[in-house]
Length: 109
Length: 129
View 1: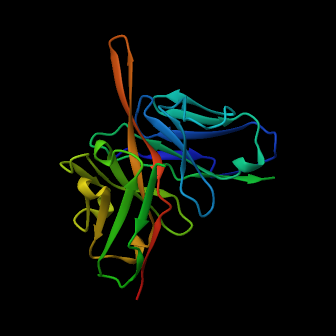
View 2 (view 1 turned 180 degrees about the vertical axis):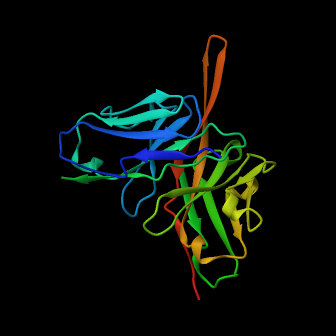
C-alpha cells in the first residue's frame, strides 16, 4: 500500500503570505498526485490534479509541483477564503486504491 | 447542473447493516468510475471503495473488505454502498465522488490520471448502541 504523509499537520499564516504544504509518498508515484481543499462541514474540492494541473475555476494563486515521492502545494498570496484543510491523494496505485494524506489545517495567525 | 446526492445514513447498532445511496445527475453516470470516501469525526479523508463504469471491477480499503459492497445501477444513475457488520470505527460522513479520467499524451509517453472532481455533500453514519 502507498502511504501519503503531509507536513506540517497544521500551519498558521496571515492574509497575503506565501504558504507551502508538502506531501510525501512512501514510494514513487510519478506525478499521479491530486490536491483537495476542505472547509468545515463541506465536501472536499479538487484544486490540482496530475501534480501541477489547475482544476478549472480554481484561482491561479494555487500551484502544485513535484514528481516521484515529494510534492508541494503552494498558495502564492493567502486570501481569507483559503483558510481550510488541504489533502493530497495519490492516484498511482494499481489496483486503484487512492489513498489520502492525513491533511494540513491552515489557520489564521 | 452536475450533482451527487447521498442518502441512507443514520444511527445503527454495532453489528447492524445500512445501505447508502448516491443519486447522480447532470452527467453521463455510466461513463465514470465512482468512489466512496469517508471522514470520521474530526479526522481526515479515507478512501473506501471504487467501482468501474460497468460494475465489473470493485476495490476496497482493507478495513472494510468482506463487510462493505459497492454497487451501481446505471439505469437509475445511482451508486450504492451496502455496509454490514458495522463497527463503531465506521462512524463517519460518507461521500460519493466521481472519478474523472484525464488522458495526457506527449510523444510516445501516455498517462492516465484519475481525480475526484465532483462530490456529494455527504451522509452521516453513526454506529453506536
